[in-house]
Length: 111
Length: 111
Length: 111
Length: 111
Image (cartoon, rainbow over all chains, first blue to last red; front, side, top):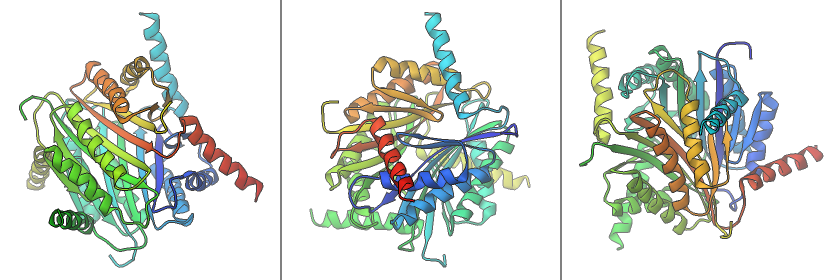
């Protein structure tokens, strides 16, 4: 990322009125859309997390996944999004996790 | 709304690293941005709900509120969003609540 | 509320694998559970907001609504919750909204 | 897990009114609480995901992390939670991700 601003986004798209309780086919459709967008992303057990350089890019990625789930065969979707937008410091998804783990290991040392 | 598709959105923007525990000044800045956007919205105790005619419009409104909170004096914000996008039926924010209340009153009658 | 601590909670329970796109019957089942719990609550277009005196009470209410939706006829539910827990000040759901509206009206006066 | 029901939970606890924009110290406090609870969990760039055998256990873990962040030095916290509760099928956090990845690799084969 070239700008100082880094945006980390987590989201999930849930289709309503599907046959059966499995959602993995819909999640796969969302993933294909994210993959095409080219952003750095990772799948978690509860959604997808990715890095964006701007809010516009973040919304573009979410929109493509949201639309992909609608196209996959449902008339209604519920999309949940959480955006962490920090202007004072560049940091990646890995940086956020490393930062917490470093603090945890320091505390262990002092106990 | 003229299209068959109606999108109902709830969101909240939380500034990180503020002085003190009150957030109402930041929420007011977000509300001013929503007000300017012209969408039909309502304030809840936990966020703001509004109606949009398209995902693009929804994201435009959220972006303006998110940026307003950043301008109000913080370097980091956390924005939570939930989008209910239904293509098969037109319905407003009031329709959703009325629909639940009608069901509740019918159940009362049958008890 | 008698303690200094006031907790305001918003949540929604979404059933997965329902017939059709309407969820109002399930939401009504959740509302009945909340009603029985006796907490002060309000329905929004995107969920339910209520006041609790403790985290334990908050989770008890959510659990009853979550279980009610499962009993209403689905094998899988997705429940989203946001908790605003403030120890330094007593305030109700109405206080939070009033506080933002007062700020908005003061800004209007000064423009 | 011994029961047929498996609950997967994601949550994050955000302190309000902290000095500065870094939250990793607070997140570390939350992680220590989860660690003590003994559940299987993983850290994501936007929160923590864990497996629970019951709603009660899930809420107990979240409560311990929520209280740990309050004790770490703030008067107000905002906790976001998403619960995926499925009664028809046992599956772990890894199962959910594997299931999506298998679908993605099958689609690649057929293109």
